Image (cartoon, rainbow, N blue to C red):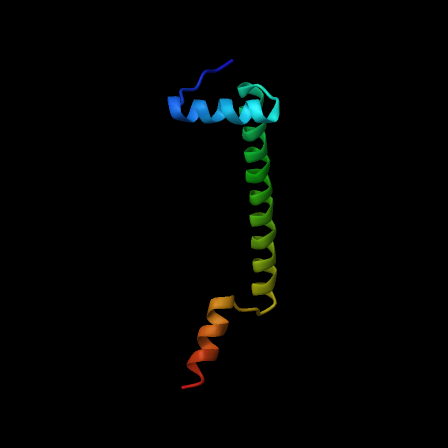
Length: 77
């Protein structure tokens, strides 16, 4: 088990939220951390998919969004 330090103000807010939800502060914090970790993992998986799609597009001659529109706007002059 590890200990973290939070400000009194934050702890009071956590206590209030825990009381409203019928949970303990510990359960509330653990749940929030798990949700955050799940979001980070999902974001990382999305980044991997985006990078794979970007690489595949580049291999097939595709161009980046910014470059496409910069070229399009530049050709209108």
